[in-house]
Length: 424
Length: 159
Image 1: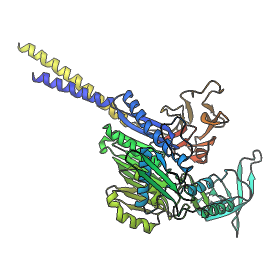
Image 2 (image 1 turned 120 degrees about the horizontal axis):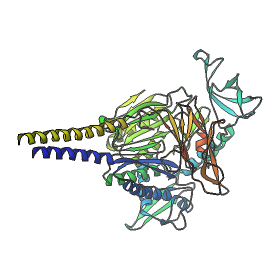
Image 3 (image 1 turned 90 degrees about the vertical axis):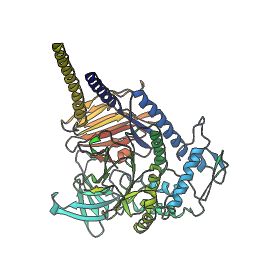
Image 4 (image 1 turned 135 degrees about the vertical axis):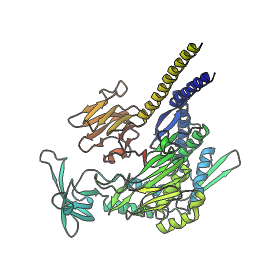
C-alpha cells in the first residue's frame, strides 16, 4: 500500500513538473502605438490564453494611443468623443471627453502640481520647436557647415596622439575618394584660431547651424505660456475639458506611454500572472518576476546605457541594477538629439526655460507606477541639481522612488532606498 | 509467497528507477535549455512577428535567410533581398509614399559586428539617423522593421 502511495506521489510530482513546463513565456509585440516598439512577455498555459492577453493588451494601448495622439484626428467611426489633436484645435471651448482621457489629463495635472510645474503637458508648441530643430542636421558634409569635435588624433590613432578639442569648427574643405565622391576621406575645419583636419578615426559630430539655433531661440521667446490653463470638470457621469492660453498646445508624449503601460500592468496583475516584463522602447520597463532566474530570487538584470558613448571602444553601459516587481524609466538626451556648441538639444523641454536644459545626460527612476515614473523622469530631467535634491528630500519617501543620475560632468549621483546600484 | 513478494519488489524498484530517470531527465532538459549560452547575432524582424526573417551571424560571418517576407502581389522583388557584395539586407517597409510602400535597407559589418539602417522613408527618419549600432536595437517605425542583437552578456534589459 505504501509503495503504491509512493509511486503515486512520484507520478504526481512528474505531472506537476510537466505542468510547470507547459506554462511558457509568450512574447507579444506591439508596433502601432505611441511611436514606440512595445514588447510584453507574459507566462501563459496555452497559446490561446496568450492570444487572449494579446487582444486585451492591444485594446488598452489602442485606446490610449487614439485618445492621446496630437498628430491625427480620431477616425470618423471612432467610439471616442475627442482626442488631444481635436482638443488642441478648439481652445476656449468646453468639450465633452471620455472618462479615460479625463482621468489621464487629471493625472497629468496632479503630477504638474507635485513637480512644481516641471512637468507640464501644455507646452507642446515649445516641444515642437525643438523637434523641428532635430530634423535640421543632414548626414552629408558641405563647406560652411558646423562640426563639433570632441578630440582628434594628430597622426596615428594612439593615446599619445590624442588631442582634446571640445569646440565647434566650420568646414573649409572636404577631401573625397577619387572614384566615389560620396566617400569622405577627410575634412578641414576652421576652429577660429587654428585649422585641423579630421578623418574617420576622430570623434566629432555634425551640429545644427547658428542660423537654425538662433531661429529656434526667437521662436521660443515668442511663445507665451503664462495664461495656459486646463480646466477639467465632471458631474459624475460626463467629463469635460476646456483649454485656455495664447500658445497652449497639449502634448501627452511624456506621459501617455507610461500611463498606458501602467494600465496594462494592472491588467496583468488582475490575471494573476507572476512572470512578466514589459518594455516600451528603450526608456521604460515594467518587471514582474523573472522565470529564467529562479536561482537568484527571480530578479532581472537591468543595464543602464552609457549616454556619453562617443566611439565604439567606449563602454555600452555604466551600471547595473537587479530588480523585480518594479518599474524603471529613463529620460535622457542621448537617443535623439542634435548638437549645438557641444550641447545636446532634444525633445525634453524645460517648462521654465522653454528649451532643453543641460544638467544631466540621463535621469533614471525606479518605483511602482510606470505612469508616474514616465512623467517624473521628464520633470526631474529639467530640475537643476539643487532643486532636484531638495525635491527628493521632500518626496522620495512618500513616492517610494529611487533615482540614478548621469550628470553633465559624467559623474553619477544616486538616491537609493533598497536597490543596489553597481557602477562599472 | 515470499518469492512473489521479491518479484513485486524488483518490479517496483525498476518502475521507481524509470520514473526517477524521467524526472531527472526532465530536470536536466530544463537546466540545459535555461543555460544555453547565446552567441553574437543580429536578427531582422518584420511586423509583430517574433520569428526573424534574416539572421546575421557575426561569428561565422554569414547571413541566414529564414523566411520570405510576405508582401502584396503588386510588389515585385523577393524580400528580404540579401546582397553579399554590398553587405545589405533589403525589406519592404510599411511606410507609403504616394501609396507605394518603401524599402528599408540594412547594412551589416562582420568585422565590427555592427548594423546600420542606410535607407528608409519615414516622417522623422529616426532609425536611419540612429547611425551605426553595436548592440542597440534599431526600430524602424512606422516601417515595422526592426533589428535586434543577441549577445552573450547576462543583462535582461538595457535602459
